[in-house]
Length: 402
Image 1: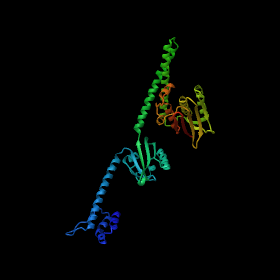
Image 2: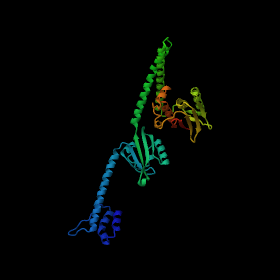
Image 3: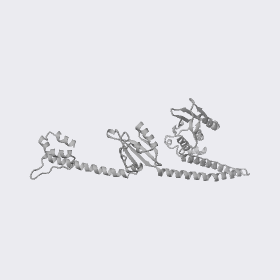
Image 4: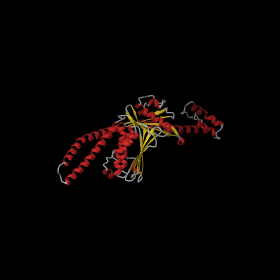
């Protein structure tokens, strides 16, 4: 309406008479009657101003109809989206939400409430605080009504690409989680069933070794034993991984002296390092506080990292470094080995992913060691990073909360 008034008033060719002629129309618009049109009465014809007024109002009505239709289509499309979504202002007050969001949080009155009043989840609150602190897009797994969801929080860009309203998206990942659970249980069951026949086979092979057999037969037995040993290691690692993946929390918690733990690991691999003429050392820049966790699992984590480092290092050696951060202890395992190409770095923690298969087979690797390391770190609420340069070595950095 203000635009229309400005249009008519800004044109100098419209006289006061013209303004007087369209005044009834402007009054009708002020009163909310957008359907008002000037009509010719009797033999009188509409003035030019009234005719232009009618044309402008018809065009405006057409545009409003188009916008309304577009809005209805968008609302219908958004209502069909299975993901729960909501839009809030910068303070977190919900402005709009789709039916899936209302059903998920069992509330018919969503608009006007703050998101943390509706979404009762400590995981979401943590994610929300991180988003508010950085302003950067956040994504994480949260649990709502005993179901897992992937939550996404990000700013919607307004005019001039400025940060405007906030979008909340929630995707139910229960089917994926159930499938993962079935796969883990299947692998664990098969691995468990394999243990007995492998033990029996190994027993018969050891019995055959005691018999007076020719060298060819003994060489065959030795090869069979090597493969049985490899299968046993694979079964052991699969069962370990299945156990770790099934845990939401650590089974045991105690104060762990990382310095003693690192020295124990070095003692285990001292001979292996000497055989390859490699150094294996521990660096302690300052006194290291204890961490609260599972000593057996943490030693298993460090053992796998050092074992891996020594296998892939032919010159130089391996350094374990312990440092105290602000709220965490940093464990670094650095080698001077062959390194890892950039295209492999994102996948090395996947189960059965091996960068150098020939070297892995030579040392009896199962491809599960780094997957086990990753899950142990996650169970301790820690983080793990890897940096590597081909030909210069690899560094694994583990961060464990104090």
